[in-house]
Length: 356
Image (cartoon, one colour):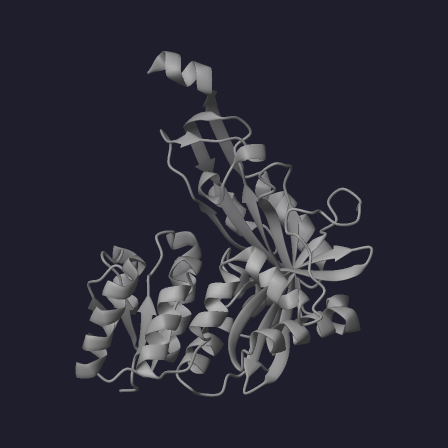
């Protein structure tokens, strides 16, 4: 059996995390470091170390002791919460991965922007919407980047449509295999300079950028797999498997980033229209029969408290649905048709309090 990879945290949101874990497990046996792994993760695991990845040095010491008795090939996480711990453990074990200094810098937005600006990287503030743009036109994008021994490849561009202020939560992510930004020399230059400024020579990076009237500006860097089903979109649109690539790079192997598809994939998120108690949430099974439908899932339970869209967090999302098509317009149409199969009822906050 191939030597396993240590994964810090399985995640708690099955709709988002199960697919990534499944793809990693298809590449390498997975030894999970998690205090209480969810039941849905069990079929993907070769073993489990009961430790809380969020407890820093104590968990790192436990993992190092564990690795002294078991042969481990790499350390990986797809959670920003545990990225620093993963880097610390990989460094102590002498395994591949982004350095602790890099991951720590990425977790501190002002420090990251100062570091990048000092290396001639065009930077922007993630809270600054940039140049005015037409409604519904994404001004925020991310470059899903794979780095292997200094070779930098942008595997895909994710375009994100943001919701209203102040929360500005993502409403939709779209990946198009033929996105014109893949050939934008200013964006590619910003990505290249970012990777080199951070000194990353292997790994999967999610590099956020704002499209402004001054050109692309780097806003943030996640030195790990992106969330929000973006790896699924990239795989559906291009055939590039970011999760398997991350597992390969974490274990010192080469990653296959050869595109095998030329399509478009998109995910849409539904947020509450009001703040209050979720009394009704239903998805018609007919949604699965819509042309272009990939999946549609409910992500909240009735009886829970939810917050309206402008102030919502990702935890308030009611449902998500994924569509695949030849073009972004095909996905737009499919997502619109699928949305009609979702119904929700919310008792506004005042009514919910009075009924309690």
